[in-house]
Length: 62
Image (tube, rainbow, N blue to C red; front, top):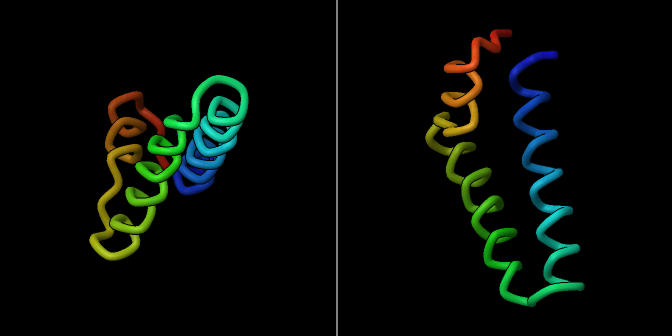
């Protein structure tokens, strides 16, 4: 699997999990959703993504 697809899958999973946690546990989990969204937005402008660095350390390549 390519790095780009893994990053998108992880971000989508984090968003869905945090939405479920916000509904069933505590509304403040939406802050995590906002955090993921802001990271996606900043990576679009800066071309730097922390998740890509983490995947690189685990040996995932394109």
